[in-house]
Length: 292
Image (cartoon, rainbow, N blue to C red; front, side, top):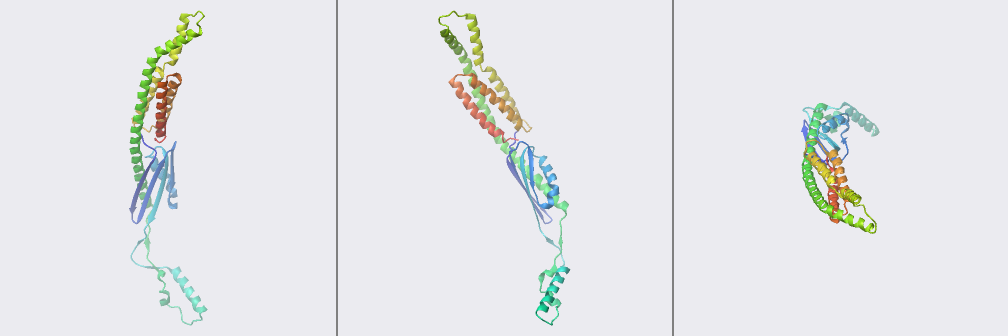
């Protein structure tokens, strides 16, 4: 089963006041390229994130975006910030001096500033944060893979229909070619006879040359090779392994045979079928570029 290289996956995880969201977007690429965008404290884990993605995805340009939000979880009790208290006391002393006041700075004055008392908070461990990120990346990558496989099914159906259409055209070309060969042989005989109308002709030699020319116009061999390439092409489409590169090679060979058929034939009906077949091959080529 073929897999598309374009897709999207998202996952969210939260625990102990930490919320993690991960998004994966994939585009076409000749190789597997994983690009990460993470908070600064996760920079040392970027290779680990790439490794999680590589276990699930084989090919494509994958953009991984990780976002982490932490909720400050308050605990019971209050604490004093000594530095802030000292700073406010010093500021009040300077105000008192500037205003030439005799009144001393008291606790009542300091308590008017609400940020002197703070609530202690608990910090979430790095292990918990990484566990959430790893789980979210894995889930997002699997969601991406599911979307790529579903799109691959649609591509497979489209490609199969087009290959079947081209194969029918090739069968028609071969049939027309077989019917035309006797006519072409006779046409060649008449043309050569006209050239040597007043000269003696070696009939045995003439027949030999006509046979050679007729064989050059025969496209049976190209049709047989095309069917062989098409067979292996469809086996790759239906196979379990990633087949994008193999399909690209086989498609080139299929196109080569169709091109040769067109160059060997001088029949207008065959030429029309060849043009249609090449149009279908081009559409398949565009689809194959999107296959893993």
